[in-house]
Amino acid sequence: MIGLRALPISSLRGISTRGFHATLPSYAKNSAPKVQSVLATLNVKAERVKTYKPVTPGLRHLRRPVSPHLYEGRPVRALTLAKRKKGGRNALGKITVRHIGGGHKRRIRIVDFMRSEAGPHDVVRIEYDPGRSAHIALLKSRNPLSKKPLTYIVAPEGLRAGDVVESYRNGVPKDLVPGYVDKPQPSKKERRLAREAEEAARKLAAKQAHNPFVHKSSVPPLSTDPAAPQTVLDPSVLNRAQTDASSTNSSLSLGVLRTLTLKPGNVLPLRLIPSGTIIHCVALSAHGPAVLCRAAGTYAQVVAHDDKGRYTQVRLMSGEVRNVLQNSCATIGKASNPDWKLRSLGKAGRSRWLGRRPKVRGMAMNACDHPHGGGRGKSKGNKHPRSVWGWLKGKRTRRPTDKDGNKMVVHQRPRGKEKRGGV
Image (cartoon, rainbow, N blue to C red):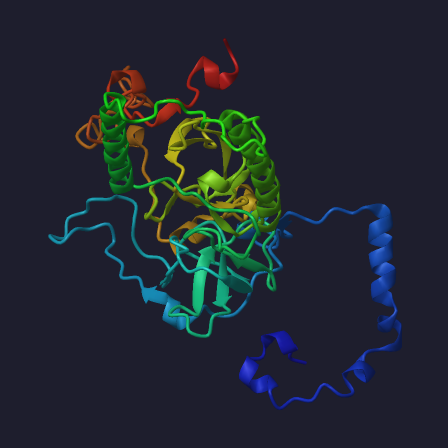
C-alpha cells in the first residue's frame, strides 16, 4: 500500500477520508498512547545520528543526522537556478581549483539573505539544501500584494512548519507597542545636518549674549499680579521629572517590544537586540545581506552596545569579538542542523557524488610535483610544511589589529597557548 505522504497533492484532492479509521487493526488503535507513555516514563532521548547495520562495507561507518521534520519532495522550481559545473577550470580550460569534478546534478536554491519585506510570514516547510550545510525554510507572505509571496531563508534551530516569523529590518511598526518610538541611528547626511544646525544655534546664542536688550536670565520674572503665586519652580527640576517619567515608560515599552519580537527566525537591527542574545545570519552593513554565521549550527552572541549608539560588539564562534554597526540586522536563534558535524560519509563514492575528486598527499608525489615529494621512503627532506606552490603553511596572512589591520576587531580569536587554555 502506497502511503499518503508519497502521493502528490494533486492526487489527494479527490480522495475521501471517510472510513480510514476502520482500516487500522484493533490492536494498533490503542498502541500509540501506550508507547508514548512508556517512552516518557523511561525518558528515552531521541536519536541524533542514524547508523546502519554493516551489510556492506560502505554502510559500516556511515552516519547521518536524523531530521524527520524535513520535507521529502522537490523544491519550488521558481526559487531555484541551474548550477553549471566547470570542473575547477577557468575560461581557458586550465584547472585553477583542484579536487573538483563530477557529482550529482544540483539546482541552486535562491535564499533571501536581505529579509527586507515586513509583515508576518508563515513557515510552510523545512527543506534540505544540497548547496549548504544548514536547512532552509520556505516562507509564505500573508500580504496578498507581495512581490515575493514565497521565499527561502536559512532555517534557525527549532523552527517548524506552521510557525510565524517576521522581519523588522525597516523598523518597528508604530502600532506594535504603544508608547515606543524607534530611534534608528542617523545617517551621514542627517549627522551632517545636525552638526550644521548645532553650529548655527551656537553662533546665534553667542550673538545674543552680546546684545544688551536680550534678557539673559533663564528663570522667568515674577508676576506683578498680587493674586498670582510668587513661587517659580526651577526649569531644571521640571526637566528632570519629565526625563525620569519618559525613561520609565520607554523601559517598559522596550521590555514589551523584546517579548514580542525576540523569537527564533525574526530579523531585528542590532540596536534592538539585548546583550547575551544568540543570533545568526549577521549583516555587516545597514543595507547589506547576511554574511556571518550562516553554516549549520553556527551562531554569534551580542556582547555589549556602544554608548554612542554606533557599534555593537558581537562575539563569533571562533572567539573573535568585533564591532558591527547597530543598524545592521541579524536573525534571532542559532542556525539549524547542528548535528551536521557528526556525519560520516562511510565510503569514497559518496565524496564523489558530492563533486569532490581525490586528494593526493604531497609526500606520495615526485620531487618535481611537490615540495614534499621525492626521496627514499616516507620523507619530505626536513622541510617545513608547504603547499604545492611552495607557500609556507602556518604563517599568518592577515595583519593584526595593532599593525594597520582590521580596526573593527576588538579582540582577536585565541591562538596557540590561549586557544589551548594556557596562560
